[in-house]
Amino acid sequence: MTQMLTMTINGNAVDFVPGKTVLEVCQDQGIPIPTMCHDARLKPYGGCRLCLVEVKGAPKPLTSCTTPAASGMVVTTESPRLTRLRKTIIELLLSNHPNDCMCCEAAGNCTLQEMAYQYNADMKKYPGEQWALPIREDNPFITFEANKCIVCGRCTRICNEVVMAGTIDMTGRGFNAIPDTAFSRPRSLQNCEFCGQCVSACPTGALTDRKSRGLGRSSEVTRVKTTCSYCGTGCNFFLKVRDDRVIGVESDYDAPVNKGNLCIKGRYGYDFIHHKDRITTPLIREGDGYREASWDEALELCATKFKQLIKDYGADTVGGFSSSRCTNEENYLLAKWVRTAVGSNNVDNCARV
Ligand code: SF4
Ligand code: SF4
Ligand code: SF4
Ligand code: FES
Image (cartoon, rainbow, N blue to C red; front, side):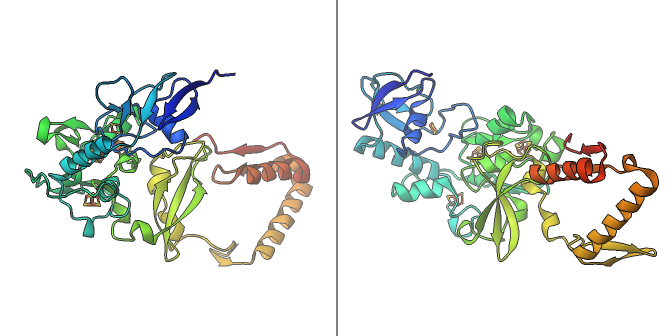
């Protein structure tokens, strides 16, 4: 059994498992600490400085996301000094921000916007030089509005640490630092998998899902938790639904299998749901074409044909090939049916994708 350690947070004794950061211990305890560059899927980074906390004995506030929790540590997460520092950080981030929340795709789902409101930031406190970079839509899935980038590095880190595609990295220095591909080439020419992981990591409207743009604000969609139907991994995510139509996919960071990570199929492969060619009723072949049938009629026909086949040629001529797009229970039922009802061991599945 792991030995628990104890520290003090805001005057209360807190037990924690060794190996956690101060931020993680606070999050486990439900103590809110603002973050911008932190993403639980990534290694601690310490770039934005928003998660500062006071630690007894430390001369300056420390970034809780990079500070290991230690036994006996005494931490304060809220104080007038911390509020002032966090507010200043947000105001500096806003100094070259376009502040066009009114028509921004991320409004209502933007950490910068949330933090600016929470800390009552003055958007014009530090009027600075502004970027005037073009909106990049040089691929089918991702819109990049560089002017809204706060250079937190979450997109580049997830692309390199988790996806390992190495498509984007920080380019330029100082004020000109920006996440980009080598030589600013379109992502499609730089090994991009279009997994959208960078979009899911972005805390602002700098990276957004192109297919969802303009289709609904965050507050206008219903989030329906589901399991990806493409392969046997079984990733979870939320379908964003508006007016009975799926308009996008959102990561489920609590999903035990994938922890918010997705590949291109789970993230962007939802067009089939409302596709006009999608088969929604059983079809029975007639002549050169097909006619629609009821489930009862279709199942009756299958049963008759299978029985005849087994009678004429034996059970081994029948097999079942199920799909990783089915649930475990459905796959189990198919195997059970083939083995017991048909009497054959010819069972396989396409889960090796
Ligand atoms: S990125 Fe956030 S803060 Fe910036 S314009 Fe969009 S909603 Fe507003
Ligand atoms: S879509 Fe995936 S592979 Fe492409 S840049 Fe983003 S994280 Fe990297
Ligand atoms: S594009 Fe988004 S995730 Fe990437 S550095 Fe800019 S703000 Fe951060
Ligand atoms: S969240 Fe800790 S430094 Fe950014």
